[in-house]
Amino acid sequence: MSLLPWFVVVWLFAVGLYGIVTSRDLIHQVICLTVIQSSTYVLLLAIGYRRGAAAPVFATLPSSSSAVDPVVQALALTDIVVEATVLALLLALTVQAGKRFGTIDPQQLHALRG
Amino acid sequence: MNAGQRQWFFGCSLAAFVGLLLWGVLGLPPLGHYRGPYGDAINQAVVAQRHATDAIAAVNFDYRGVDTIVEEFILFASVAGCTLLLRQQRDEEAGMARTRALEGRMGQTSAAVTALGLTLAVPVALLGWYVVTHGQLTPGGGFQGGTIMASGAVFLYLAGEYVTLRRLNPPPLLEVLEALGAGGYILIGFAGMATGAAFLQNVLPLGRVGQVNSAGTIWVISMSVGMEVAAAFVLLATEFMEQALDLRQRRRI
Image (cartoon, rainbow over all chains, first blue to last red; front, side, top):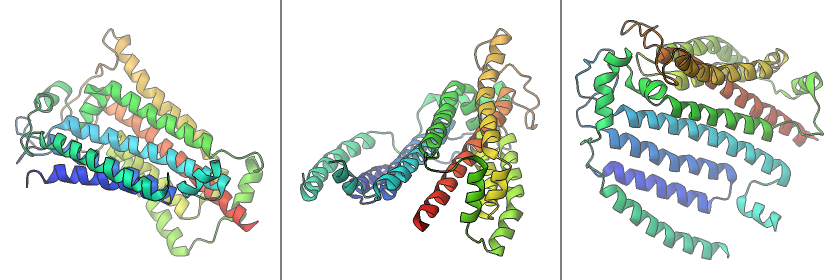
């Protein structure tokens, strides 16, 4: 059971990569990239997890009590921000590709470029 | 290389890669047995040192403050890139003529969607501001609250009030807000240097633990980031919205 999160990490990464390689649609490909990135959230949060510990918010919790690692949670937040920005840029590129070439199938885009 | 060969090649490399990744993660400490010293050090020090009760916001805006400046500028650069990519093409109309043209392209929004959008916009934006200003106390902060605030504007777009908003000409205002938010963070950093301390050192009065105006610069930076993030996401939504309207027009021709 304690290995489950690591398997989820590997599975999300592999399945996202498979999606990117076999995709026939740029938007689908971008979504697959976000699936890969979500594997990093699971990895970060699983690393900082401590059994039986509380969230690192000491509003009502005494500051001496055991809490999970706030550093990896802050990193996950950074990760999400970066994902959102990458997503926006890639979708903007997709819009332009669709406008210019009339298709968003990456394999046909390749053929168009020759 | 044809598609079949490519898949075969990919399958082999994926198998090798997954094997390597599995070998790597299986060497990690078992789940639930956290060993790193940094998380514990911050958890024990954060309330006494920074008077902040949310350790994550304290890490983001204080202990790792310089990283977050870079993160914020990634967002800034990405929005600039999107604006550049989605900018008007030369054959597309400019300025108010464009706004009027967009008006004609808006579809009819149903009354129920309009009512719901208009009702939700302000409470959602307010909730976002609440999350921004309470980031140092409970889960929240500039990034989370900023996106919630931006979704208030998205509700207005959903309500079909896009053209009304466009007439108020929000992009220049949003750009100023975004720049103020991003620049404000750096200015707060320099405030530390002006008093003889280090860049981004928490030099403001820390206040009482649990109060809204506590935690010194964490609170101020959180609001600055919230403003930047909200403006950035509204700007992004605006750009994509205009692009969609442009494409709708093209399809009609």
